[in-house]
Image: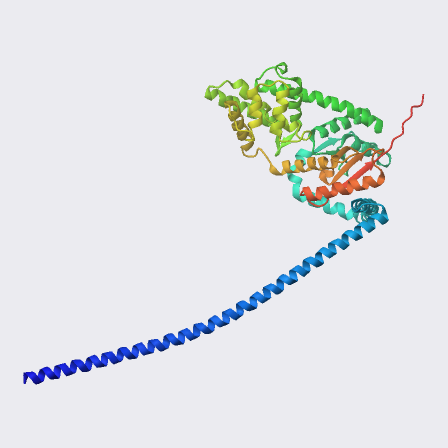
Length: 467
């Protein structure tokens, strides 16, 4: 029985081994068939890629041939263009550059003249048809924007002895008021207000000279162009004297000493700041206040207060000159103080008070601090006033930059710029061109409400004396 069981077990094992071997053979056959199918597919892909590569090579050769043909045609065109240019130059007797310059010059000259004449005619018609309406729109815009901020700083009211004086101030056909505005650069406003006239100008020194001029004329009673010029010269001298007095008073108030301890020109220039404002704050008052603050801070720190007060008093002196000399008022003021004998620590404090130069001394740091305290206290400054004044100053600078211009006045609260030119240097057409160029520069550089009218005045005078 044991032998039969062993035989049966061996047969089962052989049967299982046969089944397993058969399965392996089937797997191998299936894998072989799959590999052969994959190989056939790869062969087909390779054939397609080879055909595509051959096609691309053919296309590349075709493009190269076309590029060579285009280069040949370009060379032929360049040769023909050179031959044509030489033929034209021989025919005209000019080189191509000379011919081009001649054509450009002629076209430019003709275009400028025609444009000037056309613009003059258009402006004449526009003024005739719309001047009244334009005045209303501009006046309303200016009043809504800046009336409250600028009324106290750009307008001076003057009381007349009687209402009849208005007619004498205006003069026959307005000749007196025109002469007054031309001489002083200040707008004289005569309206229906009983017994009052107004002087309007962004420059307070110019406005004060005009006020004194008009007061002198009203007292004298003789008002005509020649007397206006004489009175204005006297008034300018009086304003100079008042500026010197204001500078001396500022020195005494601060405690620096008599004016002999400072250059007379520095004292006079310091005094002119009595008539100037910065962000609505009187500049001379700001300097005196800064000097007191700087002196007190120096005393608390145990530093000699004399040079600190001196630097603080002079730190904004460049504002009296910044409309005459290009550059920042700090750099201008420092150079001006250096030329008039101020000490090195004072000069450095002036040029460093706005951080344009790094402050390196105690005097410079204290001047910066005093300036910030005085300017930063509540209600000290008004941004809109300073922006308004800077805009009017820039208007005069733009118009004055043109050749042949002798005087420039911003009038009517910046709504009009009057430009005086030399009649022998500027003809009528060039005067129109100047007006157009100034208007273009104003449009490009400034932001302003409404419109600004540019008036170029070309006037000839003949004078003879009867003896």
